Image (cartoon, rainbow, N blue to C red; front, side, top):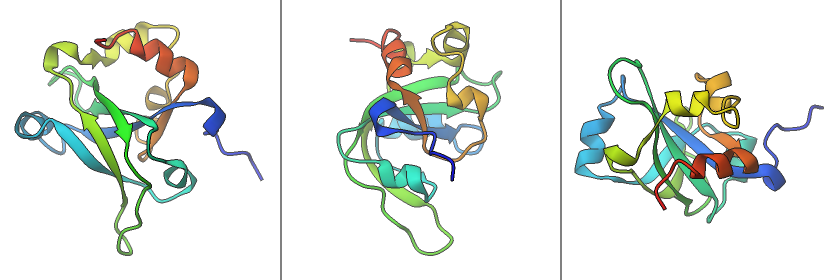
Length: 146
């Protein structure tokens, strides 16, 4: 049996993605800039999610449309909850979306040697949640407002 990729001793933050080509994230977050829950795929990663763990919101989509990348940072507020059969699980969050001027574009992160190997770059189509290591999260924080 192979060891899971995510280890709690090296978990810097969870990363959840939203596809702005599928949903108008700009309009959604203009109306309500606080994310209180998000869907996650059932599995060992969802079962590792606990209150107090950092979480990052990653907006993805056609790169020409919007400055995609890190749009928010917050905390998990509880455990991921199972949904009815065939539906994704949901994890409770307190994740404020950053003002546009404070969002971190994917190009800046991709160009940073400390962040170029982020899972979201290596496996952009992977299901939520993705993750950042402790070192990657520390590097990301250098881009965020205090």
